[in-house]
Length: 110
Image (cartoon, rainbow, N blue to C red; front, side, top):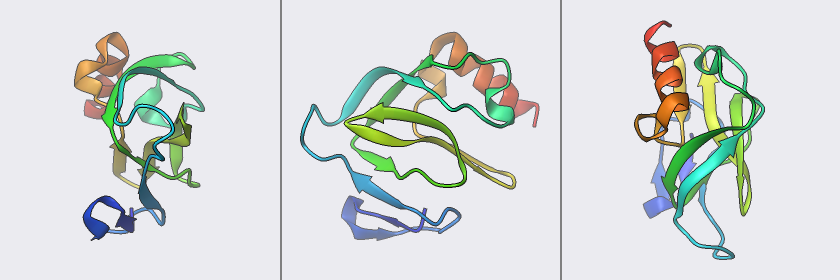
């Protein structure tokens, strides 16, 4: 992303969006299982819409044209982004059970 509110950090700008801190309306950090929707692209091949993955984060990436998966916690955000050969996920695939294993297998196969 281009900028993160975490420590007011400039980023690589591979995606022209900002990373923002969740507003303090619910528990922050967002920690635990949540569903991902709007699945697109090769990382999500073989995954069902609404698959559960594991999150631990206080900051979120905005929705962008490069968003390949969405999640909703307090507000909708990019759970995954893709541009050319760059793939980014906000959740922890290694802690996400069978869905995470499939995502990692898909990544290895790219």
